[in-house]
Image (cartoon, rainbow, N blue to C red; front, side, top):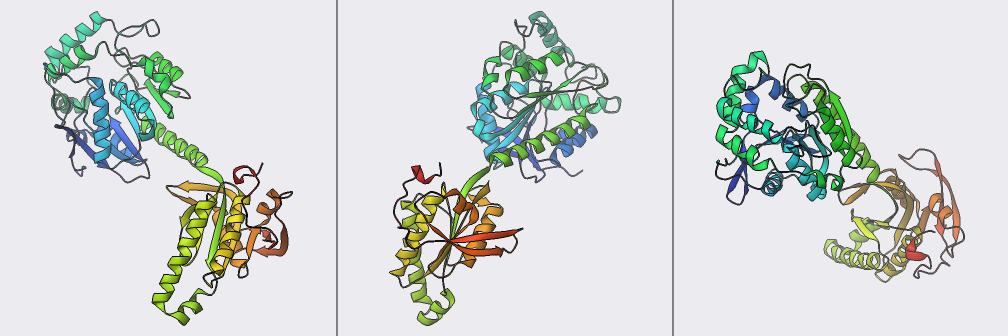
Length: 457
């Protein structure tokens, strides 16, 4: 059976087992509660199918939290604070080279996942909670949670039957023996009893309103050890913008990867797609893009030689960068002899372009420049989109020492002290429709803009 390689992350002297599966565009960290062993996950027919299903939607990172599976075990005499488990997530994500991940946490691991999302929103793309617990004991808001006496019974049951076929009703008849071995490989009875006893007073309800990432809560409408659907609805009501989904396990199993596995995988895929589409909208901004290009560069290089040409280009680049800094432009790319830069407003961008045209004359160079304003998409530290292509096409139409702008730029600056001359209507390669372009009048001074911050009011 093909299975991912087990690796170890380190939080100080504590080793944390993890695996990576798939190569999707985004990361999904899976924190499994109650049972967890990254090696034995793949021996379970239903669980391995569930994990491979998740990996179709993202680069899946599976880990055993501290105390469980292949990670460092704790003993009845030592159970770490929940804060240590949150720090462990940072260590695992760093080892897996994940800067930002969606967190999928089940059962009691929802406590750790919720805390991580609240404390590290910059590293959390979204939060998915399955049959979550955020507290163990009854509260005024959650009176349905098991009483301490009920938990005491459960802890005694752990001591007597954990890791045997008497633990739970059969999760799936054809996997009963495997499940017993899986439970034993996940945690010892003493370790689990100690963890339950140590965490009974844990209550992360106060942090729920602080979670500011997209959140999906999924619950079993047929109940999992008294973790009622009401728990999911309560959590969703406290996390801003969270949504809750119920699936039925059919009453045949307490564990989510059995009766509800396919439905959960499908819901996770839809949710991650929705998050991606939402991020794409958020990552689109309005920007003025400026393209410049040295005129006749090939001929000039041939006339003065490679070495002198490189020196001249270096001086050109220093000049342009100095002016971009002065006019608050952001350099995005330097392709060949030209620059691509963005500005918050068109007036400042035009004045920068005019200043560049005049400044490079002292180097016995001429440049052409083109500008457009439109919606662009942020891709890491770069911009992409139709506005970029349109700006490049406008620049290609410019004459030596000319600054051309699209009609969009010109229309936004009607009434300013900038003047324009029509240069015709053109079909631009790769850009639909016909576009009017305008040359900035040479009578316009390359002086600081009088508009506030270079923006158009």
